[in-house]
Image (cartoon, rainbow, N blue to C red):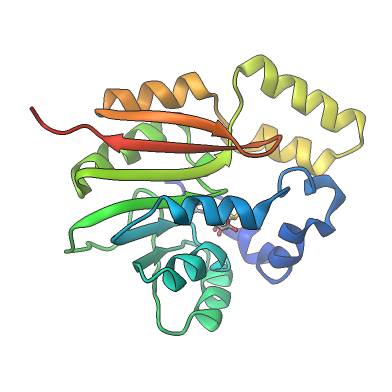
Length: 215
Ligand SMILES: C[S@@+](CC[C@H](N)C(=O)[O-])C[C@H]1O[C@@H](n2cnc3c(N)ncnc32)[C@H](O)[C@@H]1O
């Protein structure tokens, strides 16, 4: 469950850092302000932090430089190996959003960039339920990912990508589980988070969810 994209990421691992610097025209808009997006997520993080889908470890490095205690989780072996080479002193574990080794620490923040869309909406719901139990009171989830304001906006973006002959991007938008802001808001609120969405580039939105205090 949730690991069906491992093969794809094992293949992408070696060239991933080139893609995020805008070298792939199809993904240029997706990765506009990539470094700034990662820094925004890091600025909002504090204390002991779990990062899901670390990829090649770019956000992990920023969190670590900020002095946070980071535990990284990544299902793709290819990605994990690159992240481990870059970040020798950081724990990067084999796991995914739903299935990961037990962490016996109080968790202040859960972060992720460009990854939550690998879960179906049902799996996203299970993940947020799990994090609600894992996080300390006042804990936060800070995600940045491609999200659409509405289903119509998503379909329009797929049509636009096909018109530009960006077929890899269009296939990706159709194959993976990109969702809408109303769906995500509903999931966070169901599990007693208050959540804000801020658009960071034409595709990516910041989601900042705060766990409500128990009354
Ligand atoms: C587009 S990359 C993003 C990497 C990194 N977070 C970044 O911002 O550059 C997506 C990452 O999510 C990982 N991933 C895919 N499915 C996942 C899952 N179910 N749980 C956690 N991570 C997953 C992939 O292996 C890949 O490393």
